[in-house]
Image (cartoon, rainbow, N blue to C red):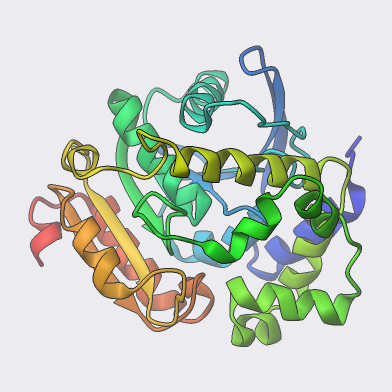
Length: 308
């Protein structure tokens, strides 16, 4: 029985809008000890989708409907939807996500997969491409991949403060105020165009354990970023070691990092392509056709894709 039935009902409504009928299951991992909810569409060669924090797998529905992907595997992030909550205090995030994602791949019988990550999910996808290269065929990072490209994200530091962040994240925001907050990541046009997605996201994060998970994650992310030597932000040498084809997809109104800085960081990845499309931090909500076409080029795997 679902632990967050209001969310699963709202999520189903979003997928139904795109005539998608996903299967849902839960995988139980031993290390880390965690139950992860998995939402799948199709069969065959897998692509794993990692959504950003404070979002949910329903955000992938429109993109999945347009991609020629045989098997789309979408994971609820920790503390979101119906995946277990986590306390990240004192945890090395990069090592933890390597273990978690490899555990999920093993539990799902996936030897290697293409990864598509948005925001924090993009950073986690880049980490795994470096730390388990034999399990990753290609990477698509959409929107600012958290601090991986050295974005400052100072606006999130308040949420990383002990007690204050957890309190703010646990506030049951009224729907109109919540729509205004979500416009910062979905874009105001996206909030207006996708009310069912706003509803699903609201249900996905208004659950026990969400605030604890996100606040402790941000605390550890900024602690690592401010440490010496720095953690989590990828150094030039890290980016130069990413061997897989990589597409970095950027909305021209994504205010989390400048296009020039992001393009310079992406250029260090040997087999990379940096593309700017019309939109914000979640650009496929603004220009679905362009985003789907660019991602499909990566998945087609033709040799010269990065220079076309």
